[in-house]
Length: 95
Image (cartoon, rainbow, N blue to C red):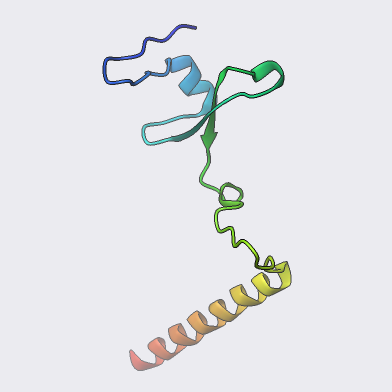
């Protein structure tokens, strides 16, 4: 499949590629140049999905220990409890 680079430096993706990757207007792609194996020297485009897994490594903290899953779970529970308490209090003030 061929594509033509525009004078603005843009490369339209053929419909078949967009469809097979599930891309829509506004979809994000991560571009890199392969450095080894079959992809060496090739342009590699990877669609970025908006899931929690896509956030991995986003908040690197050099020199600091990683937060444990137990601590993350506790933080979620604490926030949920605080929001629940607020909702209950707000409900009481509206009656």
